[in-house]
Length: 296
Image (cartoon, rainbow, N blue to C red):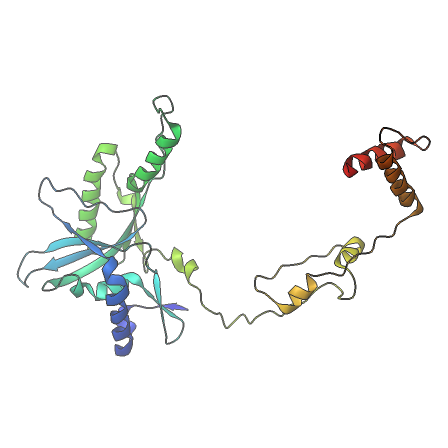
């Protein structure tokens, strides 16, 4: 399995991915303009979302404009290509089709980054009238907590990195925070590879393991467990052999003469309530009273 970039795709693959982008990804993207004029705050960036910092120009000689394109978490992180086990990151697809988001503009560049915000909760139990409501409000505000880490793609120009740090510093000024140089991490490849765990694909290196029951089919499972310890792994997929093994034969419990006499005593106590049988040890009398309660 290999993570590839847009430049490594063939013309047919690019056409197929572009069609999928227009139908399934484009309706979920909401660009945000980054206005650097006074009085315009930095757009809100959600916690742990992949964001593209886009540089635009109206004409080749016009000053640059900046925008943010946040990729929703509901979109697939990678696209599985048909030719071989190859994965295309979603930011590569969005970056290659930004002209559909900004028609008539010149896309100079687009660089991915990702913010991690603090998850600490600031709760004051003495002033909170409803403690549960206070927790719910703090959980909602946690998505906009102070930034503790910024991951950015390799190759992002230094002026753009400085601009992001400066804008985030102004955002954190009210919280006495800010992104320092030690909080900036340059990714060696695509940002946020942690979601590779969500990729499901058949692995040819690991063929299906045949089901093997450790129990003898002609004996009850309970009898075999009484004789020895058995380590089993329950299959995650249905198997006819597993279904037949999970339906053991009924176990026959031999009845001794002592248990037969106790059954007789239970019937006697049920027929003549209030009369306690005499004789026998204390253990038998306790057992008879317990049996009487179970019958009633």
